[in-house]
Amino acid sequence: MSKLRAGGALLVTSVLAVSAWAEPVAQAQNVPAPTFGFEKPPEKPPETPVDWKVQSKAGALLTTGNAEGKVVTAALDASRQAGGNKLSLDGAVAYGTSNNTFVPVPSAGDPTVVDGLARTSTTSTNEWRARGRYDRFFTLNNAGYAAGLIGANRVAGKRLLGGGQVGYSRQLLKNERHTTVAEIGYDFSYESYVQVPGKSLDGVQIHSARLFAGELWSLTKDTGFNVSAEALFNLNKETGALDSSNGTKGVDSFKDTRLVAKAGLTTRLFRALSFAVGFTWRYDQNPAPISPPTLPMGLTYAPTFQPFAKSSDTLTEATFIYAFL
Image (cartoon, rainbow, N blue to C red; front, side, top):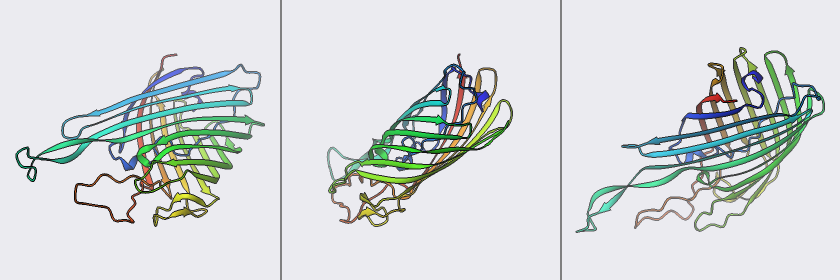
């Protein structure tokens, strides 16, 4: 995989396709999910000069006619490695609207009669995140790490996300084709919900145990495959959270497990042009509450009704990468 990233190269990418972008609830955790990834041990000796890498992505998707909508995305990844110390920074933002909901239009002459339909615009994607991670490689196979994350996903009901991680990283296997890493650590997360009418929601603090495993597999000198899985198990009772199973306050320990699984393939087509395809699956055992839509006149919600974001969603993307430097 290292041969697919030229040291110090600036990569500009164009996102070709993102699945399920038009479903408001299905975008529950696409950008700010609590995933921090992992870092490979340095492949260069400590006396090697500082190594910088920067990669940027930007994309847009626009549809008109019967299905109207637009999505724009941008991302930036940067890292600095000096000997056994590595600092990684990355961020992403995604925003999209859908104009596919129809509402009745009353007649100007008789408001009790509907003689037309109008489209209404809804926000289908509204999320951002920024992350930083520091890795200290004590030996080739052993490292400590610390990371911090901040973000938001308003469509999924999360006005603000924040947190940090510390832990131990172990390289289990390293050869010409495979790099396998496992991590164990502690995760702290803070979630502030989008306010729901008629309910007072507090910020939620989550203390979790973290397990992670990742594999980088060089299929050929120009093609690489990666797969990883992360699990967060809440250790504390979340007194300020709403239980998605019954709508009451309070979520017990080990009842808010979060999982992230990723797989991707990158191949170099020509000297400076590469193609990548990736798939991400995210699961939140206790998703955030969301604000229900406004009902037409004459209808009301049941007093105990409270919708929640979906617990599972996926993201599929294809990307062309061109290295200018």
